[in-house]
Length: 66
Image (cartoon, rainbow, N blue to C red; front, side, top):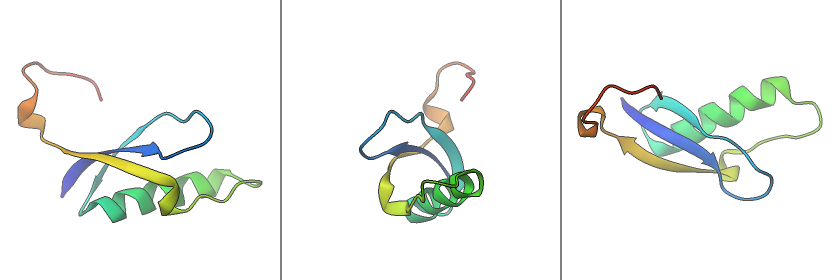
């Protein structure tokens, strides 16, 4: 498993989500599925997102909140 930062690829301002997934495609799908549970007017697809990562926690010099 890897840690990924998932961001909106275009359109409205959108924060990022940090997810743990096997690969980038699964990371995007997890975020899209999670957001679709709460939405009634917008349907998100994995293609609506981009992935930054994988994030290696060993690259951080100090402890941090993600």
